[in-house]
Amino acid sequence: MSLKTNPEQAVAAAEAVDGPGPARRRLGLAERERQIVDGAVRFFAEQGFAGQLRDLARSVGVTHALLYHYFPTKQALIDRVYEELFEACWREGWDALLDDRSVSVEDKLTAFYDDYVNQTLSREFTRIFVFSGLTDHTITDRFFAMLRLRLFPRLVRETRRHRGSASRAKPSVREQELLAGLHGGFFYIAMRRWIYGQAVTRDAAPDRYDAGLVRDRVRGYLAASVDLFGEPAAAAPVASRAPPRRPRARVR
Image (cartoon, rainbow, N blue to C red; front, side, top):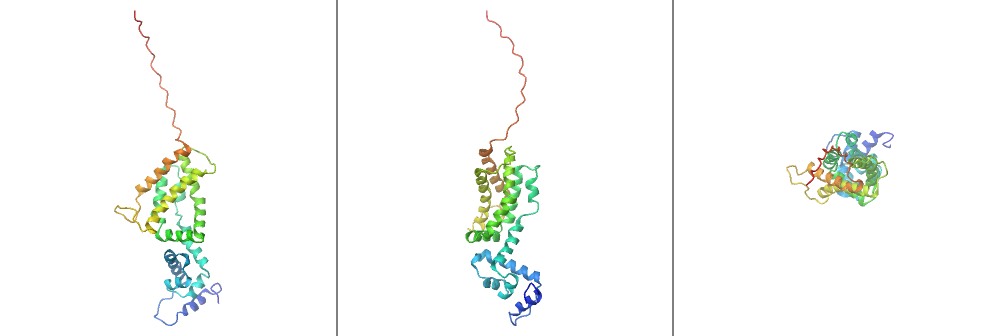
């Protein structure tokens, strides 16, 4: 009987394939699914997407048959990993932060990227993202589509606001490339840490990229944006009335 029609019986039958062994607590459907998804995240972060589902099942501690009942294809499991690790990475509060006009552009970009680098770009996130980029682009394409919808337009808008521009025109190629340099530079921090195995800080918190360094990158980006928009228009100085000039005495 299929999992769809009677999941409890299907899972019990799949678990029975293990045969006799030491007694262990039977997990509920949600617990077992969580076990598989968490194990898949670790597995794909180490092996990439070339790994076989049988090897994944073995690493998780379940049978291939049981894994199949939860995720009948590798793509179904990859889709679930994307939802768990990438789609859910957009944190509550980021929209409000980036839309808050009471916060300076420098401060809001610094706060956003400090959180993005240190809380979102985990080892598993970074490695799976790179593996996807080297294979079928399934995860990378979906993630960049989300950034183009939720993040990049806000960053362009805020950069223009910083430079005193209210333009709503489509971002120019120069704007897009400057922004790609900012965002890609932050991802390269995670690449150095989780792909190349290089330390990225020398302060008291070696596992955290310092907020001061994030601000330096944001300031560099905003400084470079002057070439795209020019300096904000400065208020015209108030003209002061010059004192009347005294007539010069004639020399006789």
